[in-house]
Every structure is written in structure tokens, then in C-alpha cells.
Length: 607
Figure 1 (spheres, one colour):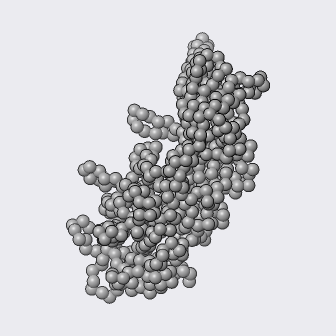
Figure 2 (cartoon, helix red, strand yellow):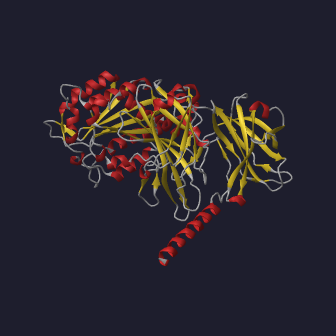
Figure 3 (spheres, helix red, strand yellow):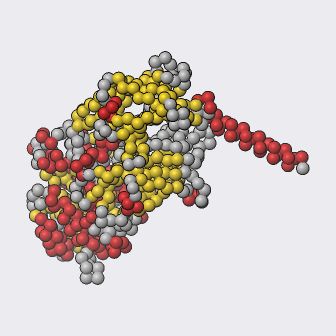
């Protein structure tokens, strides 16, 4: 009995000790400054509209009472947003907020831009994760705090905000926190690439009327309906006879838009918690009225002036958005941001050259055949892609290549690829009808085989589904354009239809890394079960640049690849509809056009 009692007492005192230690280190790091002036958001500006059917909304987030998943500190939350249309198999990431350290009731300043189509059902998932960055091992781990899913329609119907409890499948019905999703509609004119950036600069903010040595910070909110959206949070400042916070910028606002200023005390001596001091409502017009604007902070309970914030030398600044490089959070590769929209380049004469490479190997044969008297799958894909791209191709000249087949009843060796119309000197088809006619007329003239049957120009053997020789062909054309001085007036969109995954991965990577230096975008249309495209899927390197294994290693200068999956088993859900293919191509190609131009310091006037 005595042993049991000792064990119970030991557990009791250990629990108390653990609780005290945990409280002592929570919020060990004071709040840091954060602003809505995110430079990376400018990247959204160049992902412009190609279709008027597409809509855009901007989402902002705040959470309450998040469960603490860390042992000796508060969670470091971040919200990740995923979307999935009725025509898609899996979730795709739409965006994420910034990471906030040691906070269970976070307001996020960084919004997420969401693209969608009116005529499609879109499901959303919001995942709140605790992110841990391990500096010693240079690794990042995450734990799911909770998540929430809903149709986009529910969000659009709500009065610009939706509140829900978060859930964690591993924790059953246990409460893990709440999330508020604030929605703002964006019109197409607001997202067209901008050549300037307008900010509000606050040169100096100080406080008076507080006790000496009181550590404080302030937050600046704007209102969206009745919801607060954080636009700036200052660093913690130890009050002195003349306390001042660092200068900062926020995005431009309407002059009469309400701004709420909240003042907080950071209780370092009380385990790092925060205490509300008071707040006040003002407008940007009032802050800009003169060089020294005083705002009284009113206590919520006391209903009296608790302190006074002094905003000095506030002004609106308009600056050109210069070409620059922005390193992603992981630091693995560079995204180029551009001050122009892709439409600006088209207006000044940029030409689109559409090239389609068709998989004609034996395993692709079933997709070239009519199913129950209907249109063959690959013919549907060709038609829908070209009907979308034709308005952007000024001469309406489409190049069609085939690979993995050879002419029937011919003694010719199988070639790595060939013009589908049989004319190497003029492989183009003018208009959609001629392109479809060329495909229907000539496909039956070829005997399906494998690229591995072709004789390579060097000792390296081709694999069955190799398509990299087509990429090399486009590289040769670009090099010719470079020599003649017309390289930058034509941008290639290479669409490669693949049905198999037996490829020389390193040669494919090498071709794509080289292509990243030229005006080329590559879209892989993968037709078949999702599980079979392990190698091809690796070529779409959104987070890590493709790299040639050499000494020293050579990385792709920009991302030029988009991977689009077509599942033959889901054709009833219009898996190859024009809207689906259009949306997937819209996702990256406009930005890729701008990234090439920015990388080469080309404005629309000098292409």
C-alpha cells in the first residue's frame, strides 16, 4: 500500500513540476514584427487571367484556442490551404500563411489567393499545422493541430467570414481550436500585373503615458465587414522616457477605411503571456493628416485613456516594382518576379508557338481508339487543348510530332520522333481543324512500337517512352533563333502526351534544365492510372529545382514544367474537359512567360 501511495505522490509532483516548467518557457520569445507588405505576394500579380470564367478570392485567417502540440513551448502555427475540384483525384496546395512562433491565438497577415471556376464544384481544406524548424539538422517537421473542410460555395454564401471548429482525425471529437476564414472577392482588373507598388510608410511610432520599463507591442487591424484582418504587428518595445518602435510599411488602404490600433503588454515575468491594455479606431486619412498624429488608447474596462501612440512622418510612397529575385523559404531555388503581366508581352508582339508531342507507343494504342463509337481520348485532349490555346497563337500554326512508332510497311528504322504530317520541313498545321484532320489521317499510317527501338546518336540507349529528343529539337530551334536575334519574340509551349513511365530520367532532367534558359514551357499530359507516373511526376519540381548530376551540379534556373493528369477511368466526370485542361495550364504558364522575361531583363518594349 505504501508503494502505491509513493507512486501516486511521485506522479502528482512530477505533473506539477512539468506544468510549471512548461509555463516558464511558453512565449520565451517575445512577439516579433509582421506586416501585410509581403513581397512574395507580388508573385500572384503575374499569375494573370487567361479566361474570363476564372474567379479569384483572397482568404485571410485567424485562430482561437489552438491545442498546444509542443512540449516546452506554445505551438508555432501556420495555415495551409488545399483545393480539389470534382474533376480531380487529389488535393492540390493553393497557398499558405506565414509561420507565427509561440502563439495559440494567431492572426495571420499573409492571405491566400484562390483561383476557381464558376461552373465547377470546388472543395476546400484548411490545415492548421505546428511547424518546428530544427536548425542543427536543417530540417523542418510539422504536426497537424486540426483541419476543416467545406465546399467553396459555403464560403461564398457566408457573410464574408466562416467560423468552424478544427478537428484532428487522430484525436476523435477532442476540441483542438477554432478557425475563422475571412473572404474578399477580387476583380480581374485588380490582379493584372502592376508596374508600381504603393505602400504606406510609417517612419516612427512612439508611446507615452505608460509606466517605465513596461514591455509593450501594438497591432494594426483593418476591417473586412465586421472581421479584423491584421496588417501589422510591432516588435516588443521596453518602455523608457522616449520609447520608439521600428519604422514599417503596410499595403495602401482607402483613406477612410477604419484602422484599429490595439496595445498589448508582454508579461515576460508572468510566463510570457500578454495582457490587453486598450485600443482605438482611426483612419489612414487621420494618420496622414500631419507629421505628428496622437492616438489615445482607451481601456476596455476602465474606459479611460491608458496611453497615447504618436505616429510621426507617415506618408504614401509609390515605387516601381523592379525585377528582383525572391528566395523561397526553403532556399532551394529562385522564383523570378516580374513587374509586367504576360498580356503586356503579347500586346507588344510576343508570339506563341504550340508544339504537341503524341505518345504513339504500343501501350498508348487503346487511347487512340474510339470507345463505344465516341471520340478517341487523345483526340479529345488535342481538340480541347488547341481550342483553348488558339486565341493566343497569332498564326494558328500548331506543330504535331509523334514518338514511339514507325511507318507501316516500311523498311525505315524507327526514329525517336517524327512530324505527324510526314513533312520535316513544314510540320505545322494551320488551325484546329487541320490539326485534328492531320492526326486522324496519319495516325493509322504508323505502327506502334517503342522509342527504345530507335538507334541513338550516341552510345546511350533510348528507353521505351523517352520523349526528351523532342525537347532537344525545340532547344535546337531556340538556339537558331538566338543566333538570328529573334529568340525572345517567340515563346514555345510544348505539350507532351505520355501514357508510360519507362524513361531515361537523367536525360529528361538534363533536357529540361537546359530548356529552362530558353523561352519554353513544358506541359506533361499524363494519360493513365496516377500510380504509374513516378518518373514523369518527378519532372514537375515545384519545390526543388531539377538538377543535373554533374560536378559541380547544375540546377534549373526556373520552373518550366506543369504536370496534368488524365484518368481514363473518370471520363464521365469530364476529366478531359476544356475547363479542366485550361485551369491546369493557367496555373503556371503565364508566370513562366514572365519569369523568362524577367530572368533576361526584358520589358515588353524590348522583346
